[in-house]
Image 1 (cartoon, rainbow, N blue to C red):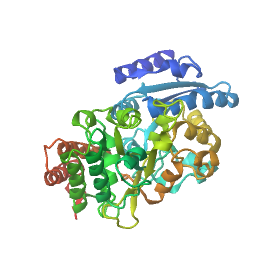
Image 2: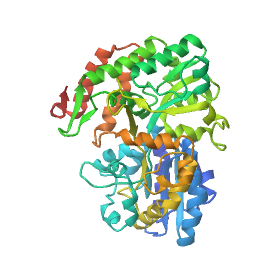
Image 3: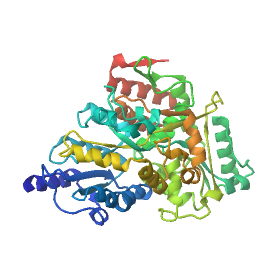
Image 4: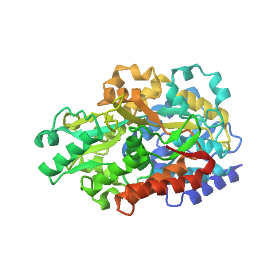
Amino acid sequence: MRVKSYKKLAAISVITGSVLFSSACSDANSTSGSKKSGDSNTISITFRDGGGTNKGLTDWLNNDIIPEFKKEHPKANIKLSPISASEGDYFAKVALMLKSDQSAPDIVTEDTFMVNSDASAGYLEPLDDKLKGWDEWNQYIDNVKNGVKAQDGKTYGVPFNTDSRGLWYNKELFKKAGLPVPWEPKSWDDILTAARTIKKKDPGVIPLWMNSGKATGEGTSMQTFEMLLYGTKDPLYDEGKGKWIVNSQGLLDTYTFIDTIYKEKLGPNLSQVLNGQGGTIAYTQLMPKGKLAIGLDGIWQAGNYRKDGPAPWPDAFKTLGYTAMPTQNGEEPGQTSMSGGWAFSIPKKSDNKDLSWEFIKFISTKENNLKLLLKENNLSPREDVSKESEYLNLPMFKEATEFLEHTHFRPSVDKYPSVSTVIQSTVEDVVTGKSSPKQAVENYQKNVTRVVGKDKVIER
């Protein structure tokens, strides 16, 4: 059985290539030793350790969770296998790991937009039977629960965080430019007006940052493209008809807004924004140095500025504001947001599903979920945690929680990751001037139709 263990570790090493396994971190508090097949006391956990805002999850597992779990399960051997990789690389490497019983972990963290795809591929274990006997599942927000359901109607994960997105802005730069503070834009035109004013009054400052290329992956799709598109009358997917909308005024207007930002030089240089680390640089360097006025991004960016964060900034929340993204022309309800989050899932090829489920239940209690959210500055998927004063007092959490009232979720369809790749490519073509907005819509229609099939698309 030890042979299988070595094979498993070897397979992981091959698959992950240059990926670093942060064993120094995980070994500090987890039990070391090889996993033995059939050893009901050992489980392995794979998660993304991207540093920065991911640091809270690692600290929580090592310092809060594993020592306490071992008090209840003294024979348990918890092996952490963090993957240090970009978000896109993490998804690709996890998919490869889940294919093989030699490399599949016992628990894996999944971005909820990948749950449907991995479940449809047969990589994940449905949890419905286990959830029926777990009374804490009733505390999870219904919208968030839907995010871990696949097209077959089954549930494949237990969310440990969710999020919302809005507009970060530097109040000092706004005052210097004569712009209103607090800032409450009512339309896309209000955003353009503010960005143009910043450019005119303070030319050394980047007016607006939006992730805009293939290198920033899902950050481009969700933080930029879908935050704009869902503020129009045309969503990405017609849920009632079960079809992708591949040609609409909303699509054209979304590409046109992005085109305007770069044509008028209201955004960063292409060398900055097409860099895979661009988003990190924007919020850990440019924003604290007063070189960025507005950023369209998620609440998790607040975690950068905590004392133990990657860019400690004591005055961050005196300097920064966080306001709702308006709909295109102020249409009801006046604002929009996108939400996602991450979940713990059990791979189909896990060696130890029973202890894995016990571990997931333990880490998902109200007390333990609150400890995590206080560390990583994301929103809770649990209603009871969202009412705790410690949670509500976190900087900007009141605003971010209010954004959830009008938020949207990505289509729960297994082809979404492929459609998202088309989004990233067409956005980059607009940003670099390779395509006009009209050409981008044409390319989007052509490529999404190729990916999902002619019978799964409609025009508006």
